[in-house]
Length: 283
Image (cartoon, rainbow, N blue to C red):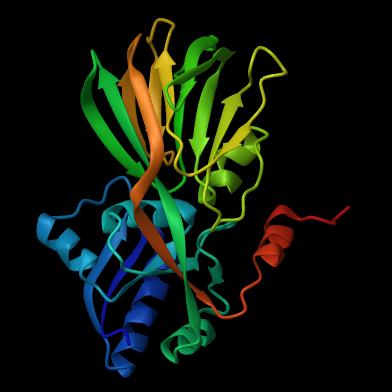
């Protein structure tokens, strides 16, 4: 069972901090050791030893919204350390456990009544002059889009090295199934069941309405080449990390070897989550 745990909570959120302290006290009564107690966010930084401790935890408890979970997932870096996500925000597709049910759910989990879901992550390599200049790992998505200038851009799309089309759009999204309920959904992309094996390519406000999202197998490789002047075009990972792109840069996306592992209570109903979060059936 879980004996060495890390607690990560959303920075500058007093409610998340107060709840994290209560969780830490609860763990002491379970003879569990909290080896890392740390905030997560733009202003929070981690030493190498802290990251190694997190990656060697039996589990990581994350208190915040989906953004906090995305940061935690990248910190864990694909190591087989399951995450317990506590929703301290509003929507929370990944942080599924509500703060109201927090300790009741923790009791279930620590009694062994839980399932571990394997979630696909996405790998993105940036190639410039045929050399890899940067590489990223994300849980939700890779977005290639414009900056502050409201100007349409051209993107050459290749799938498995086959030319598909030159897409005129505000940007493009390459999403995992977990990320399909994030920016992809807002851009008109489909919802994929989170444990499905696949990728979604979704254009953002395409100039041609017949350019539609496409769902691909998880062993396919998607290349996007910036075929317009790359000024103010950025690659964004999980909506949190950005990198400026230039004309002729190639972004190569594929499902990563690394995975994220999420702990969910036994009997959790994903369709109820969709119904509640997206307010299906309401008038």
